Amino acid sequence: MNGVFYVVGIGPGDPELLTLKAARILAACPVLVVPKGHEHGASTALAIVKGALPLAGKEIIEVHFPMRKIRMNAGPDPEVEAAWRRAALAILDRTRQGLDVAFPTLGDPAIYSTGFYTCQTLLELAPENQAVVVPGVSAIGACAAAAGIPLCQGDDMLAVVPATFDNQRLTEVFASFQTVVLMKVHRVMGRIVELLTGLNLLSRAVLVERSDQGGRERVVRDLAALGPGELHYFSTIIVRTR
Image 1 (cartoon, rainbow, N blue to C red):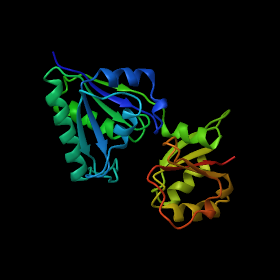
Image 2: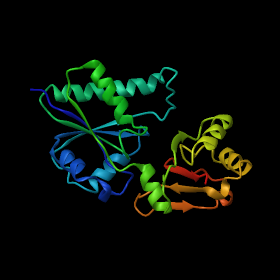
Image 3: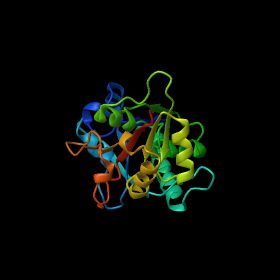
Image 4: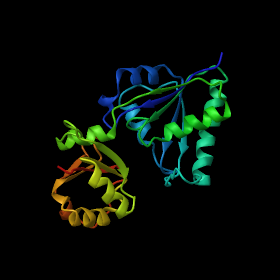
C-alpha cells in the first residue's frame, strides 16, 4: 500500500503557531521533504519544525527551490520546474515504499506556496498517489495581528497581490478594494512608497517584516522613514484604503 503525501502549513515562523493537526502529521511521518531558498543555506521551514517537534529518526530531504517569479500566463523557469520535479520524484520514491511523506511549507499552503506546485507535479507524475493539504496560519493573518489592524470589516473587500505588479495595475487594485496586502515588497520598496505617496495612501500603510520569527519581527508605520537598506524577503505591506 502506498504512503500518503502531506503538504503541511506550518505558519509564519513561531513554532507555537503550528496547528495541532500539523504537529501530529509531522510527528507521524517518517520522511520530511523540506524547501530552502538558497542551495547552501538552511531551510526556514525545517527550523520552525525543529522548534516544535523532535525529529530524531526521520529522513530529512532538503530541496533547493530557486527564488524565481512564477507567472500564470507563462511557463515556469526551467530551474524552478526542475526543482518541483526533483522533489516530486523523491516523494514518489518514498510513498511507493509505503512511507508517508510531509512537506512543511511556510504560512498556509493555499497562498503562494511551493508545496502546492510540488503537489501538482507529483500528481501529474502519479495521479493515483494520495495527497492531503493541511492548512496553516497564514503570514497575512500574522502580519495583520502584529500590526494590530483588521484585514476585513463589514463589507470590506480584500486583495492579496504581488508588489511586483506595475503601477497602473496596483492603482486599479487600490481603487477597487478596501484592504490591499502587498507581498514580495523587499525589492520594489522605493517604487511602492512613491506610488502610495501619490495616491495619498502612505499614512494608511503598515509594513511588517519577519512576522513571528523569533523576536526579529519589525512593524513599520512610517514607510517613508525606511532607509535604503534592503528589506528581508519576508516583508509585507498592508494598506487600509478607508
